[in-house]
Each structure stands twice: as C-alpha cells, then as structure tokens.
Length: 424
Image (tube, rainbow, N blue to C red):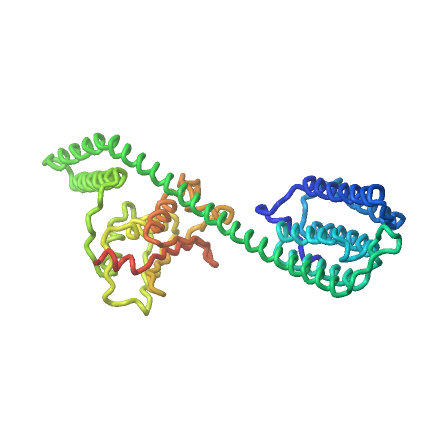
C-alpha cells in the first residue's frame, strides 16, 4: 500500500496540465541543449543512448497528461522520481557531476518540497541525494572536443557533490518552512474571517432587535393597559384575575427584555452587575426562564472542587448564554434536565443534559455557527447561535454532542478570570 493516498492539499494544489507543460519545457530544453552542443560546439555526444532516454521522457509525460483523475501525491512523487532517474542516466553518459547541467537535478526536490507533504519532500530529497552520490563516483568521461573525453580530479567531483547535496537539503528546508508559515497565516485568516462573519451576523441581529423593540412597544403597552383594566374589574373571577396578572407580568418582562436589546443594539454601556454566590446566581437564571415546563424535572449537581466563596455576575454574557441553553433543554426534554456545574483548570464549566431526541448528527458541525432549522416545531437554532456568540465575547466556548444513552449535551465553559475581572 502506498504511503501517500490523499489528493494534494488545496493550498499546494497544481493542475495536472500545468505540471505537464513544465515537463514539456524541460524536455524541449534537453533537446535544444543536445542540438547546440552537438552541432554548434562540435562536441560528439552519445546520441544512440540519449535519444531513447529522451523518448522515454516524452512517453511518460504523454501518459501523465492524458490522465483525468485528480493529481495525488504518490503519483506526483512517482513521476518526479522517474524524471530524476532519466536525467541521472543521461548525466551518467555525459560526465556525471562534471557536467554543468547536473544542477538541473535540484528541480525535482524543489517541486516536491513545494507541492508534497514533508515526508514526500524528504523522500524526493533522499532520492536526489542518492542519484548525486552515484553520479559522483560512477560516470563516463565528459564529452569534449578532442573526442577523448574529459575527466576531472575526483576531489572536484566531491566538491560538486557536496554543493548539490547541501543545495537540495537547503531548498527542501526553506521551501517547507515558508509553506508552513503561509499555511498558518491562511488558517489564521480563515479564522479571522469566520469571526468577522459571526460578528456581522450578531450586529444584524442587534439591528433586528432594535427594530423589534420599536415595533412591539405599542402592542405591549396595549396588553399592559388591558391587563390593568381587567385587574381593576371587581366582577372578574379568581382564575381570570390570576391569568390577567400573569399576562401583565409577562408583558412587563417583554418590555424589559426589549429595552435591554435596544440598548445593546445602540452600543450603550451596560450597568455593572451585582456579584452573587453561585447557587443564588443559578436560581436567578432558572427563575427568569420565560417558559419552564413544570412536568420536566431539573437536577443540578455541583462539583466537589467548587470553591464555596465563588461569586458570579448576576447578569452578564455567560448568564444569558446559560439561560438560552437551559431554555432549549426544557423545550426538548421528555422527562428531565440534568445540569453539572464545576470549576476546573481556572474555568467555570456547565454541562446541560436533556433526555430528548438529541441533535441530528449531520448538523452537529454547523450548529451554533449560523441559525438553521433544528427541530420539528420550528426551532432555528437561534438560541445556540446567540449563546456561542455571547461566550466567545468573554473568551469562552460552547460544545455540542449527543449523549451515549440518548439526548443532547451542551457544555459551556468560560474563564474564571473574567468573573474576577468583573468583580474587581
């Protein structure tokens, strides 16, 4: 089995036809060189040996260029090795390393370093160094005008071998290092572009929130007025009065939420939150859930290593993110929601488990990256998207998974140093 089965990486890809054109150029240069040396410099070359080798190069390139499959690394290395071997045989019959065109052998490790993995580049470099070593000690005399051939001192051949070997090693090292840096820069650019895209979507949501706050202010005021009138009606039954009170409470809550959204959309500074002990902070989040299903059991487990004196901001990005995830869990759960809270490695981590259907495996990679349909009742994944964005603003992260026994698992993690900064 080949060591290289993958298509060349996209960042180093080259079209098959482009590489074929480069090989045609090398073959043409070889033909021109032989013609000039033979006809114009009057140096007799072993044409009976060189011509079959040159024709073999043409046949190999024809086979290479006629294939339509994606260029794979193992195929590229095989053809580079074949080209290098053909050139090395030609050099063997024309003076070995004493031939000034021996430096052309460095073309092949250069191509491998630019297009292949590190292992492939090293293998091509080793193949080239082996060919150079053989040519340094086993070659025929360099053809010369006197017809006798030219044999230079062995020390000269050793010097040329050393120079070419070091050149091959230097080229592979430098090209690989430059390509690695370019790849890292490209990855950083992609990450920055993804972060910018998320921020733009968040900004768009802020604009929509401001517009929603404006559009809903009148209906909510009307609902509040009607609720007050119902409560002032002395003939109203007890159940109807209870319902009117709940309506008034929810309307007031909606007005508060929309007012906060409008302030955030306008970039207004948020007031400093009070610091609460962790259990009380959690109780506040649960109490503010807009629609907690009473039939769903909520179990909370605090880790053994939790600091007893840990204080958490009552209302910040983390609290809003936890509220979004907890609300989703209650909507999806069948019977219970389990929450594990722990402090590890300088971070506060909250894991929310539900016993619902879990996430669709095909959607896991993209959930939270952008709003998209995730449930049969019309859920768009907006809560996951907002929670992830809020956590990223404070250096946290959100991960999604499916539990082994069924249901969804959402882990929220953010640094305790952020909590300490806000406390200060």
